[in-house]
Picture 1 (tube, protein in one colour):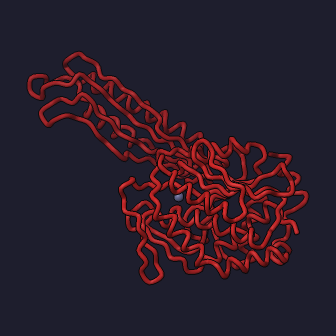
Picture 2 (picture 1 turned 90 degrees about the vertical axis):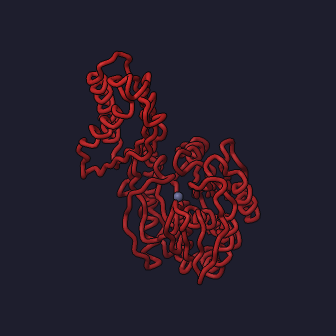
Length: 407
Ligand SMILES: [Zn+2]
């Protein structure tokens, strides 16, 4: 990777003006200006195909046909990622453009898109209907204008970005392309006023406590898994969370017990730990383990009857933290595109497909596809396509700057 960065820096990123004024690129930019409505129609069609985690196949097949119709060499890999390659002039390098197929909505959620005064409403319309439609639009613009690049541009509609999908799609893509990857650009959501360069790390754990259970009156004094769980939650909640690196925790789902007059046999809670720093996440996890071990010990010490409780803590999700280097050519590429287009953006931290490459030292960013969206992960999700051309052109210029436009 160091070698690659070296050669890129030495050659310097092509001035963005020269790229934008190249005849073919100018034609692609003009196509995007004129065909934003086509992109929006694709977004509606894609969003209306349900794609809950682990069931992205039907939506993937639709996106595969769309990419194949626009000059890409398309295949679907073993985990379900749809991959469309646009061959570059140098075999060795690839730039990955990813948008995620999966949504957080269960299979029976109605996904019809409602149109109200230019605004589109429907679960998944923005996250990540925007990203998927954007990659289709970019592929089409490049195909229509016959734009050439040095690195192969790989458009990917990947699986497993949300929740317990645990980034399995992007993990497989990184495995496939390994040390050929020059950069990864994730297109997730709509807004163009930010660039995600810091990957927020997270660890999700499930804490389960089991015991013999018994009668609330006659067995009183036996250790109680719910009480032990509550002790652990309170104990861990006292852990100071640092401001820098910013770190958070959330006890999100709790369950257990059998009936109001039984001492329960089990109790469990799911916890989400987040931090900008990987080492800090490790520290939080060990604090959590200590808190619950102590809580179970305290509950047993307080009990008057024998039968011990058992504690099991399992990791149910991992997103590693990471950060794009300030002197990365990828950061220069998007900043130059923003300057050229007169777009103002700030650097952001978030949890996206860019986490995994960033944690492995591969240059990566996440950006919005254009337009405006809101209510992600809720049934009131919406998207407004007004001004989406800006996001499309911004993404195209960034891709060309990092992939190397060739006339
Ligand atoms: Zn998303």
